[in-house]
Image 1 (cartoon, helix red, strand yellow):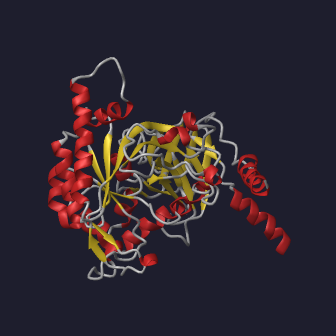
Image 2 (image 1 turned 60 degrees about the vertical axis):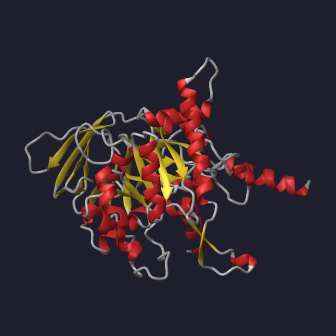
Image 3 (image 1 turned 120 degrees about the vertical axis):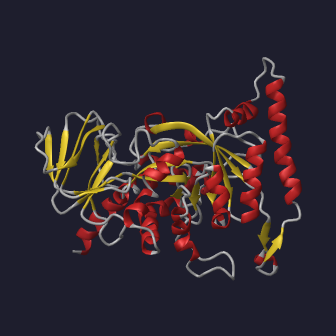
Length: 428
């Protein structure tokens, strides 16, 4: 009974201390003048003029142009404007407190769950979600975990009353965890921490192939009865959804590409892609993008260059592969706020700064299929952007002053900033 009381107390704390109230709809035009605008498509406009109304960008150009400023005018000389950053392959809003089972909803029971929709479990009241905005992360792909086929992701903006308000692309893709060709010894059982062959690899791959074959047979002999998992898989073959294959090593990626071709899957993305640089020509030939694993990582193999994770994006991008950055791994939800600094590291290891910026803006928007309305500062796209005092890819200078999501002036207050102010007064 005591444990039950503690659990209910923790859950009530999550519910009652809700995040900031979502911003109201844009009520009038806004003009931002004088800042350096980083458009997200590789272009930079010094002394820019950005104007937007009804949540859409109406002008993007130089402040030197003779054009009337409309609505509220924000003077931003010496500052920088960026499109909102996009975090793909994220479990934001699906888990709040790892130690409290009732707040964890990132995975589902079973191995084959293409029909499971992560969006209906997305918690817009999450304190973790609101802590993304002060670093410029304003959109995310909410992605399920677990099993062989985890389920279906959706893309959201991070200031909403509920998931229906948050979603900007529903059911964008299905996530497949490719079987591992190798695994490490279980150190907690006294096994050596070295790579060993997965002897069940072929069997696991056969099960996956059989499941897709069953879906094909279901399509050819469909009756009035519905089969939700198979119906979801069929969305891959008609091009309505993208197959996101989570795979890191060369053989896994190569086998996944062959599998997708055999299954007539229209759109495919590699997620992780640690050894994607070994298959650059094939990725280019097949036009397969890569959502690259967290670059703030150590090398996986003893014979890898010490800085391989840092420079991998440069190797792929300069070779013509479309690349975005993702941040899955340990403490991934709270670490998602560090997304801009992952791009900063890619810039430090070979990429041009504006090209590195595109890894978390326009490139990711293209991969997620939302580039027609977001991902860069271009007329007609959503006014999802922010003003920073300095370089947003540098943790020392990424200090946000104002944030707009679809033209709405969003609060930068979070649970963390409230605590900071509270205890700053005490200490002072």
